[in-house]
Image (cartoon, rainbow, N blue to C red; front, side):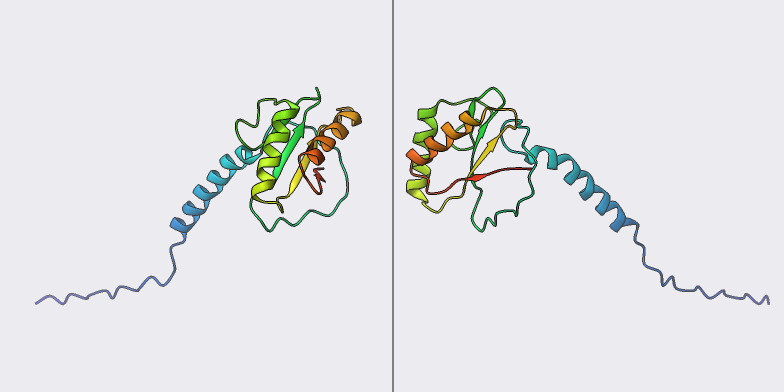
Length: 138
């Protein structure tokens, strides 16, 4: 009779991390693809400034933009890449502020636009009932 020796199998005590790495790579790719799409509104070359960021405890702020050509854009009530007239901005801002008077209002002004055009926008916002306006910088 032959003696068969049975080899005892050792248990693999190492954890297989390959599936976790694959999941992390997929998540990384998803975030890399969606992050550029999160920018709002029109392409505005913001001026450089060292300022403390505003804490926004509430939902998304109301952003009004001025591009280098002096066109106005707003991120409420339609396509925020289509220029709107001053009276449209006043109507939309006043309706938003009537529903939520504590809404954060921000102005994104291109660094190449005339200062006068930004001031005109801020006057429009004041006439619409905005108590304060923040300026967006890079």
